Length: 380
Image (tube, rainbow, N blue to C red):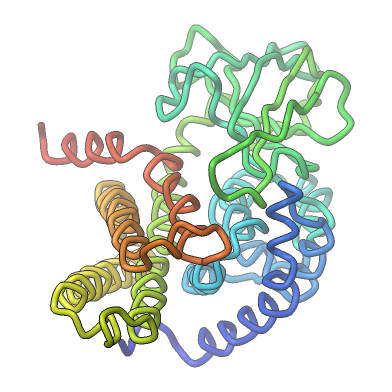
C-alpha cells in the first residue's frame, strides 16, 4: 500500500538502512543466533552509518531529530529481514529518550559521543525477579551516601545486558516515598559490585543477549543520577508510550512480512497436482491475513502520525501495542500452518518468526497490562 506518512527523505533513509542491514547484519545473523549475542562491531558500523542516536544532538554525532518516523524506518526494515539481534530500536526508541530528557550537559559530553558512534552500548534495567510490568513493585535500592549512592539489587530479562557499557537502573532512592521515591541511576561497566549473570536461554530471539544483572553495594556517583532524584517513575511513564509504539511498529511490519512470505510459498508449493494457493481454504486464510495486516498498517501509521505531532496518548499507544502484537502471533501461527511440515523446520524464516514473535505480547508491558490501562482510561 502507498503510505502518505513518509517524505522522500524518510524513504532515502530507508534505502540506507536496508543496504546496511543486507551487508552488515543479515549475512551474520545465523551465527549470532548460535552465539547468543551479536558482534559488537555491528554497533560501531551502525553508528558510523548514522543509525544510532537519532534523537541525540548532532554535535555529539546523533541524528539531531525528534522525528520518530526515522526510528520507525529502522524498526520496520529490521523486522522485515528477521534481524532481532542488534537491538538498535531498543536504544533509539526506548533508551535515548531518557538521555535526551534527563542528561546534564556534563553527562551528555561523557556518554553521547560513544553511544552515537556505537562504541558504547546501553541497556535499561527495569524488570526484577519479583516485579515485571508493575514498576512500583521494584525492590532495588540506592542509599544516599553524600556524594554517591550505594546501589543494591537484582534485575532480570535485560536486553543488551551482556554487551552493555552503560545501564540505566531503576531504583528506589526513598523507600518511604512510594512511586515518588524512584530514581534512574546510570551504572557503568567496571564499577565494583556490578556483575552480570548468565546470558538467558530464551525460546526465540537468540541473537539478542538478555541477561541477569546484580548490584552488590555499587558506589554510583551523584554525577550519574539521570534527571532529578525521585523523578524516575514520572520519566518511565512519559516514555513508555513511545516504547509501546515502537513494539507495535515492528508487529505491524512483521504481519506484512508474514503475509508476503506465505503468499510466495503457497504459489510455489503444490499438492494434488496444483499450487496450494488455488485451494479455497488457502485463499480465504490469506485473504483474512492480508486484511488484518492492512488494518494494522493503517492503525499504526495513524499512531505514528499522531506521535510525530505530539498527540499520541497513553491509552492509544496501549491499544496499538496489545492489538498488533496479538495479531502478529495469530498471523504467524496461520503462516506456519500454511507452510505445513516446512513451517516447523528452523531453517525456514517462518519457523524462526514463530518463536521470535511470541515475546511481543509480553515485554513492554503484557497484553493484560495494556488492557488495564485502556480500561482505566474509559473511567472503569
